[in-house]
Amino acid sequence: MFLLLFPGSRVSALMVRGSVGQDVTLPCRYSVRDHGVTTMYWGRGELPLLWCNNMIISTDGQRVDSRLSERYRLLGRLTGGDVSLTILQAQESDSGLYSCRVEIPGWFNDQKHTVNLIITKGE
Image (cartoon, rainbow, N blue to C red; front, top):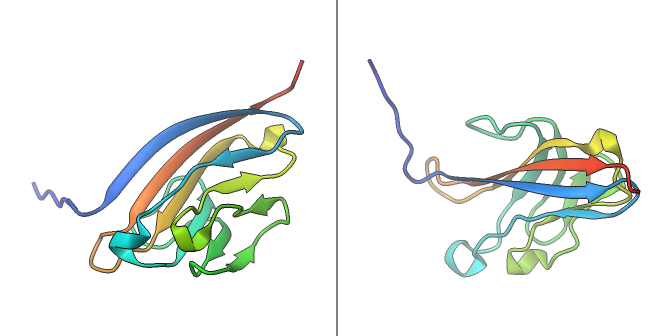
């Protein structure tokens, strides 16, 4: 049996709830002091070992490079390491897993966050 471990790679999981029509924010932050301003991606679903599946928004750490929809925003201070994803006017179809990957130099050092978003109809 062969077991390969990547101790430098950090993964965290979180659940966020919201209501249809409201804006929701999925948190993702990293230490600029420790790593400098860097590239990051948000995608739908689980993160593969490398890169990002189903990318919906990305930044070079200074500005947004690309986004799938205008509803996806990075409203935090990017140069301060706040790369939280805000989804404007959430819909039930937005429910599911989202993954944030912050590129940290070195082999398998990327910081990864997985967020399970649950959007329900308001009362």
